[in-house]
Image (spheres, rainbow, N blue to C red):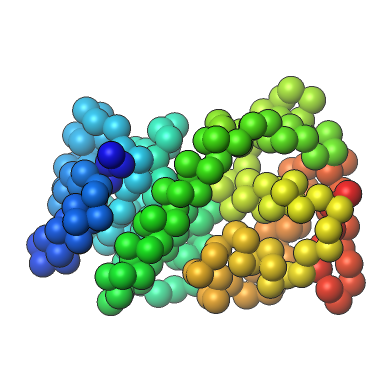
Length: 219
């Protein structure tokens, strides 16, 4: 049974989410603030964490820091519908970002998608792309045996290219692969920045070719 950590200070929202998630078969542990989260993270393990961005004693980013190094997916839940915060959340390793007010069925669907994606990565093996090895079970990337530090988004970009080696991928196809149903708020120029950062980190290990006016390809 999947275990979910819910950090939400609004009692009404929290009680509704706990009930709905438990009806879906998940075990839900609820906390109201960063202090609660710290205690629960020290003493327990979770498959996924749903984190309110604005908490009485800090932010969801603070809880995300506590989860680093643990195999826990992260979904931010917040009233802040700002592109800067959205980009920061994903660069910080978030798996999804949901704004309030939200539709309960959509939230449940996103939770299921994130958990299924994690399970799919766990079942996979090591993939090779150019001079890079991608250990999808561990979520790690290596160049000539040396670990490469990638953000969650950069990792998913690289994995998308590896899974579609030799194919020309349009920008919209890449965004759909990375963000799924949440892709509608990612602009083209944002993707360009991420591609640039990934290229810089990969160096000459992988050639991400720009197909002018169409998209990208990795052979």
